[in-house]
Image (tube, rainbow, N blue to C red; front, top):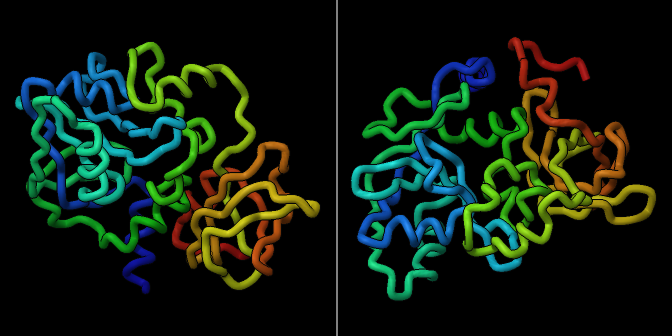
Length: 262
């Protein structure tokens, strides 16, 4: 445990990296037009690694990946599973001359926010540390955001408006500039942890859903999508548990190795 806490402290300070095996190469004569019609990012503006979302026709997030330019087309490093991302793209290949090739490369996610593709993950932090690191930093996993609108989970910066048609674009165009009612927030459990997802209630009415709860050196913390009118510091209830609503990232994201006194 002491070794993991030391690794967590270093990662929160921006040192080191995480490595995820499996990258998808999208190549072929129609690689650009196909991917341009699927991803929320405008490939014409791509000059380096960029996060992108893959939506359904209701504008909800299905998959997410980091997109890299490649001499043969484009590389996609999934935020979830390689199989899930590949399956999502294959559903939309009809007459497109596109090939999806699985490569044994690594998505290297550096703790300072930079990303790259590498041939080895040697020296990376243990993968079991990643959910805890992202939780404290307020970075959602794919499992936290799947089924949500990008603007409800703080990922509107991954949507390039004006790029033309792509799956989910019509909904994004309709909601451009409009206020959304939910946002991604932090939860601090006031008792033992419970299973997620779970519905959250405030003043007797449902106001959101907890997406992730984890034991940390600072107690049980989590991420949730909650209505914006609920103020930070409010006490929410769900499945017999009680939670304080907090802004992201958590204050412990600047951890210096000392446990919280709370």
